[in-house]
Amino acid sequence: MSPGEDGLIGIPFPEHSSEILFRLNAQRRAGLLCDLTLTSRGARYPTHRSVMAAVSLYFRGLFGAEEGAEAGGEAGGGGGGGFSVCQLDCVAPDALGALLEFAYTATLTIRSSGMRDVLRGAQLLGIQCVVDACRDILGETAGEVEWETGEERVQAERERRVERGMKKGSRRKIDRRRVTKVESSHHQPLPHRPNINTHQHPSTPPTHPSPVQDGAHSHPSTRPPSPEQDEHPPTTGQNGERKQGRDAGRGSTAVNGGVHWPQECLLAPHPPLPLSDDRLSEDEEEMQGVGNGGVPSFTSAPLVEQEVATGAGGGGRKRKSQTPQQCPVCQKIIHGAGKLPRHMRTHTGEKPFECSTCGVRFTRNDKLKIHMRKHTGERPYPCPHCPARFLHSYDLKNHLSLHSGARPFECPLCHKAFAREDHLQRHRKGLSCLEVRTRARPRRGPGADHGEEGRRVRGGGRGYSPDQLENLALQPHASAFHPRAGMVGLGDGAGGQMLFQKEADGEQAIALLGPHRLPYPGLLWRGLELGVRGVEGEEAGGGHSPALQHARWEEEAEEDEEDE
DNA sequence: CTGGGGAAGGGGCCC
DNA sequence: GGGGCCCCTTCCCCA
Image (cartoon, rainbow, N blue to C red; front, side, top):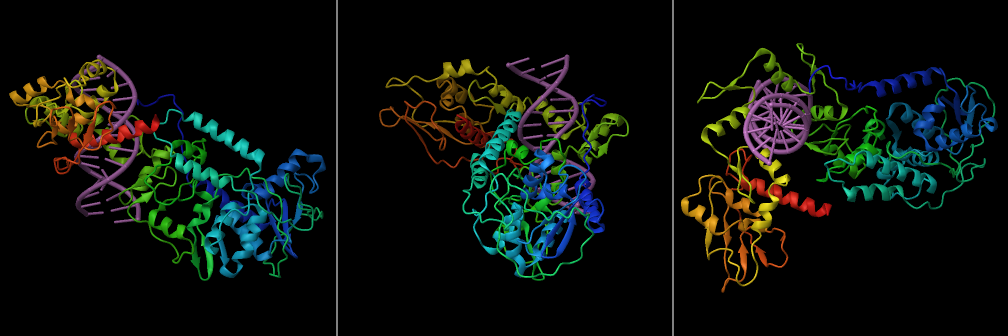
């Protein structure tokens, strides 16, 4: 990547969203630019319809309908500059105030005693993440509310498909299980949905909840009283809302008898999920608003917090991040304290470290430092055998293998050896080996001689002893029965063993290869639990062990199977 | 196709 | 817990 390319540069401002929200809240408190007043039993709450539409499915449907039928807008000037008052007596004033606070602060602060009112209000207004959070706390199950109409469901599904298509080249596997789970949660049945308010609320499409048409600009309201609440849940609500906080209430913590939902609820592009080995697919990342060009404000989601929060109820004020942290975007587990911000920059594209010489930017300081060596000419890794010096330690490592002639990475098919593991992988992914593999396919049947009884082939990728080489010659590509299999026997040191043995009369081949899949079904292979020596401890770093490579390829094979 | 250089990202260790 | 530093792995690009 040379500097000064004409590619687009994205400069993220992670604080932007929260600052905007903060200022909107200040405006709301000051009554500035408020174009909507919510009332509940005498309490008045000036607010902004754009904010309410962003937070509440109910208002989104409401104002969307207004825009669609602008002239007939009961509230007067749906998309225009008129003011409107929406009477929501069905929502308790306290709950309404809490929900408004939530809308502007991404934090829901309520008393436990008011939880049910808030839940009801959130249901009425279609604030799903609050609904979920309250349910978590109250131990209720979901399924009472479904804001997504069939039509929207189709549209949402269409959008999802488009997003998937955009990421078709993704290397990561789609976690189908999770997709199913997420989608199923969106497809909850729409059971009984009591009628909101006595004012009209036919179910879809929603109509205006009969706002009191006073048309006056509301003044900032002070705290409302909290009278009793009547029971008139609204029927309406269309759901275009998918990601923003559907599950987002999980990070709740109790505060002084109240409940506090931290900002993840609103800001996190994806609610923290329970720890899972499965990674979220990039498709889902996009579905969750990451890849759409926006720069979400990321909130770290420590695993411990998630686990506790998922359990709901919550005890302490706020839990500190533990060492393994889960990326709220890709769900990847990041090990090591302080590593999550570094990882997050891979999502935001933020490159705060700029080379003062050439202007190239880096996501990490250490990368910049290495880059600077190019300008300073520093090559801190000298070869002890020759004058060569290198920028990177791994360059020296590769170079040393040239001196030694070591090519520890050998193709199990054609036995071509490589000095670098990635070159071997590239070789394997290419087609250069296919011919060999075809030729190497052993004959089957009684006449097949896959090896001598008790023959062992061991040793490193290089340095076969003469008789080992002879054995290899006598047993051409026996390992080709499974491309991954042979690597077991190619350990550099005391690598694994590979044993081909004729059983009894030599009809069956037993491969001490572990539980591999069998690419040639006609041949009976038995994977034996050998406990491959050298898998652990063969190399201190565990890095380039061919046995480990083999294990990796095992995983690849499984993934390939899944793909198929 | 292969060898080599470089970048990006993750993990370990330490302060 | 955050961050620096280092190492490792993987990928891409070029000759």
